[in-house]
Length: 238
Image 1: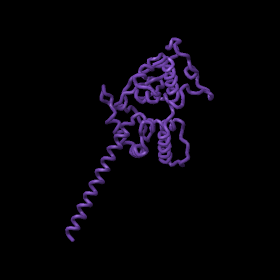
Image 2: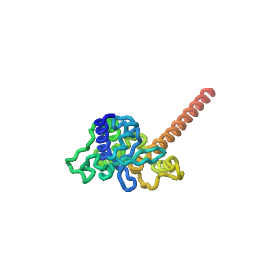
Image 3: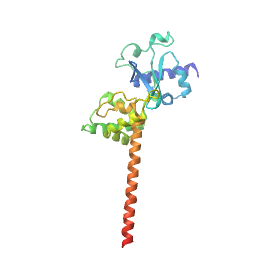
Image 4: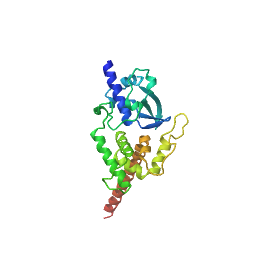
């Protein structure tokens, strides 16, 4: 990979961190995603990404959440770069209103499908709180709703999870365990549905919904069989 190409990807990843690096770990804020997902967002291969994140501009940490491996990435301390990468204003002081992300929007923006899904999720979320359809959610909620859309949480899954919150939490306790201790990764939770918990355990959300659908489909099939048997019996008696 050319130095120019590598520099472009470094800038793009820094921009992605600035926009979406909101995962808390060890007292820092990180960008959390599996490597293939980050690579796809940057328009490069996972192998190229592994080279990019070795750049002194980044600090990384490998972790496992919800039974899946993730790479946490954040901006390195400016001093750690040893002058090899120019300091960004956002790395040394809060960004002003006129500040712009370093990455090109085409590389980091959500797809139209994901944006449409976010709007469907927003409607479900505000209606559950008995708010009007045009009610505005907080910036934090808006970002989490988009993250849910990117994680493949469909409106059907989302609606089922927030309507069956305790079932979802039980699913997290069962499905998402630390491989070294076999204890649940769910350290704390809100008694009422919260978007951040679903973002942290999307696979558990999908699994409890699939289990529900399988039970529902099986129940409906059994009912149809019973109805057919009953009608056949009536026909034989006529």
